[in-house]
Length: 144
Image (cartoon, rainbow, N blue to C red; front, side):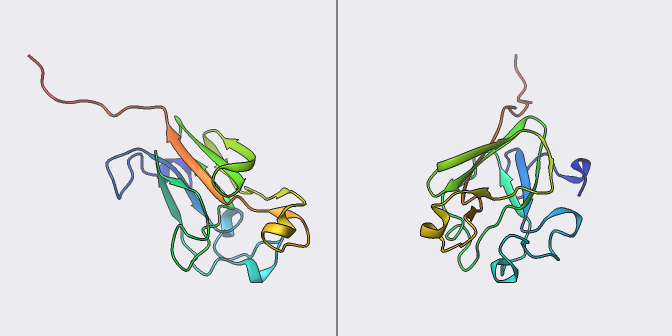
């Protein structure tokens, strides 16, 4: 989707929507499998994830029961940022994404991936994340 199609306020709350992510790459994000790990790594819950400011994920296996929340493509709204880590609980390699459209939030190479996930190619996906925005909502309360 385009940046202009992304809502400013999260539909599920009254906070700013920091980012949207989806479990595939590029324009055909929900139709293609992960070229690094093959079809077996395809998310069984092909869903766009909404990330309101302040919404954090410490473990991509537990965030939505029965799913692995895979962030492979992402839109980060102006005034916001996404911080992604490649180990659980905000540890390991960290990548910070400023506002923009990212069609390949790819894995990082880490020899510990074979120990943590059993991947033989040493490519770790992002597994924990924090989303924030620097804006504050307007206060429309009348003042005397």
